[in-house]
Image 1: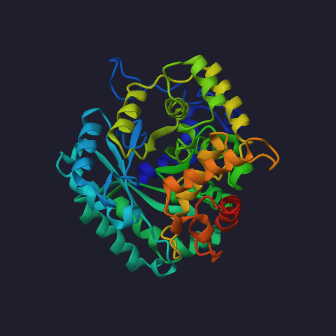
Image 2 (image 1 turned 90 degrees about the horizontal axis):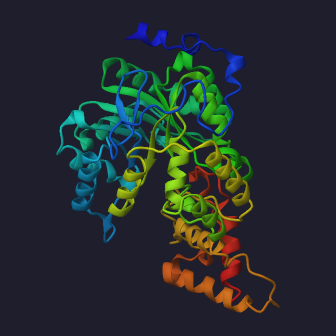
Image 3 (image 1 turned 180 degrees about the horizontal axis):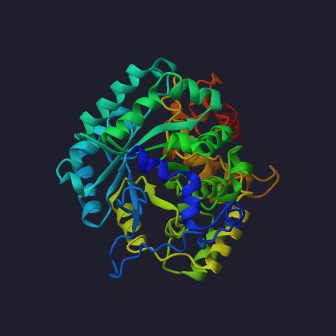
Length: 451
């Protein structure tokens, strides 16, 4: 196995493809025409899920992956019956990649996923989970082993198909070394991969580009099998402008040149791209009247060929069915459609929304705020054209202010409003988008207090 991995080194990979660094630099366009060609996963039979091949193992992976972070609930408890039904539907319609983590749903996602998937033959699905060692007290080998073994127990498996170091980036290369390298954790999981108990080893990325470059540039040593990145048509070229993060275009192309396949998270940017402003929606429906904004966003992401699977947190059966239909099979975007999406991304970049993806890593708040829901309501007010408020002398000022308050009253108990923020900053290190949460809460609170 070690010899095979050496043959997959970046240099050998590029040599086998027949192109070098100079030609690789040219792969910077949004269209999927690149060194790997257009996606070739589309099956001959209409209605069948598009499949991508893991270039190392030959795994046939569904282009649509099931993200198990936002499962259906009943009185805040996971609705296992509904999870089972949705998993059954997904499997019967070709979805075979299921992504979870020890921290999802307050630590209960892995158990729910294990109960649902274990009802099916093990060779019918790929399960992905993570080492979510976020606290410094977990930065030791014994804690890592316990979390890893606990994951296998809850998932009811004796091997994990895709294992990730969770939320890598943070405060830079030094933190990565302390969190994963110097303590022997990464070496342990590399050994687990050699033993076959981990079939593919990767990491999910947020934050410091220094860390990303370090991990990809030294892939001859790390031998990553895949990397999970945030990618959508806004983040492709506007991530820097919006959240001080790295454009997905850079991340994707660097991974492609290194021969590392991508798993994609946040294709809808926390739901924002499913609820675009009306003028943007009109631009899309003029071209494809029957397609929703969400379908456009998924088609855009799936049209890039170095992607293994695209994760979607599908809480309801309706969302699951729409996403399955979008990729059964994928109709890749045309050059003109890519140009349209680029135009829309440029247009939307000026909309003053909070770049929250509703991951809930910031929760719970010690003072009772529902941080992501405050942002979601605020963003809806922006995309609906209610915010920003006009001058107080404008004839519709009071009406729009009242509309904002009604949105918050409908969506949240007042004890959860942004007005309750104490600026304690406990949420700041938890946010993978590096949002200055107290500052944003202060702006929302100012609007709510105007009433």
